[in-house]
Image (tube, rainbow, N blue to C red; front, top):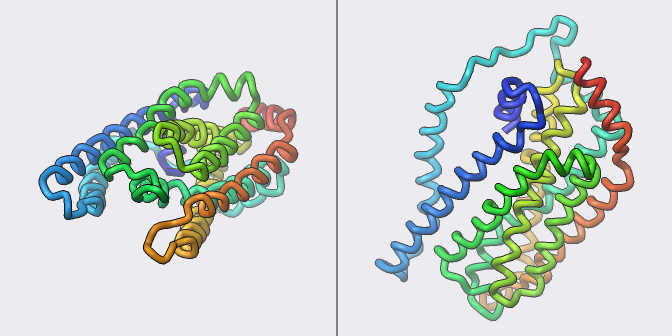
Length: 302
């Protein structure tokens, strides 16, 4: 992801266009999820007693090979050669001493540690039988999750106006708060329409948190360090943050497993709420919007 962001920012030149380009990734995500939903529905009709959810791993393997071949068609993007900064990956660590950059990395790590509760457990929650889960069949549960990507399309198109008029601080805070609101609705567990509608908050959460964070890193970093800065963000979020989150969500999911195999979902989803709400408060208090705008000007000049 860090590499694709770097290639994108390098060729578009203006970060304002990032949302309108990144939205095509969301459209691709919707396409594959609808395809998987149709695939699961077909097997639910033909062999309802056999689960084919794991087939998505085989489909992902084939898709990965296709995407690897497609990467050979991308425009030539040579690495930036800077004799003054031969070890940019070490120099970028100095950016963490900057208050705004350090706050962004630290808060992003905390939030992504909570997100595996969504990525790993939402479909399980939607498909677990009543009265504990929502009780949807796997195909319908897969289809319901795409509401988040549909909302993400609109959010991607609104990303730059949000940053411009709300500022990076409040855009980021709104993105973080979308997650605990969604988890809070999950603790209620009903009615069905509300559980499905809550998926749309993924659009705000992903765009105003992940995509806005990528734009913020690009604008706070000197040109010679931007690729390494994006790598550091991905390392802190999709690397260490997600790793901790996967371990935490798995442990919590197992701890709140009931004797008959169901789960106490309300207690499970309280854990990420307790992580993301303080993270949003911390970012709102510590991130300096005025300094961000000044550093953005300096970064463009550098």
